[in-house]
Image (cartoon, rainbow, N blue to C red):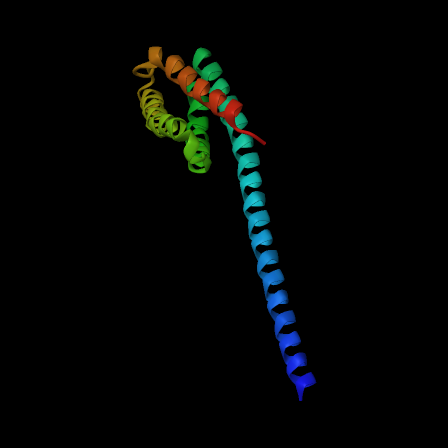
Length: 150
């Protein structure tokens, strides 16, 4: 009878040890999963940052060459890319997130102005400010890119 109790207590101790190991493994898997998600988000953000910077450069070139219809095709893509970047920025970069939050309506205003000018066959209103606005947004993106760690 004593050996049965010893066997039960030993089995109970082994069960507790295995549950503890399983819990530790589950925590490690959860941490690894979070790290993987964070790494993927960072890679996507870096790619989107580079894409947005290139889009801005193209738009500036189109503006310079007065290719308004071609530039119009790039505004929506730029806004969507900025929105994606903003949604993935960590809390530590909340000031950069706010800068992007302000940039998105500025892009919309430019798009509306260009669209209206195409329909009216004239130069967009505020075109003299477009380069400055785009340069400012590009600068913010470059700052975010330099502070984003892979």
